[in-house]
Image (cartoon, rainbow, N blue to C red; front, side, top):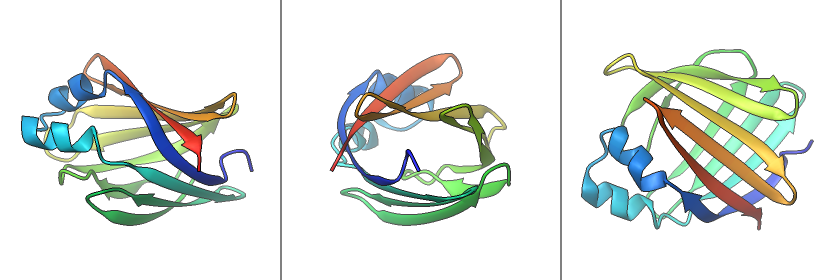
Length: 132
């Protein structure tokens, strides 16, 4: 499957502004911008296993496309939502449990990079990963 493999964050675009809009305090934003995030994705049909390893935590996530599940961001923000495939792109739509606002995330392979895009309250950001 296209997404399968281990991906290490290479660079970010507008990520700090996105985190600020999400309500993440300055200290946590500074730490998160240097989290050395590594994501391992394993897809089997419509099921995904994702392992996120960063400076701050290691998290295993299992989900099935189109099935709602709960998830917590590194800062503790709780979300509920699901991922779907739209063509060759994974799209996640998650609702924050604390304020009901929606976070949209996409993952797409562009050239040899995994581009993860975020949209929240009109603020867009990207994290670009390289295989590693």
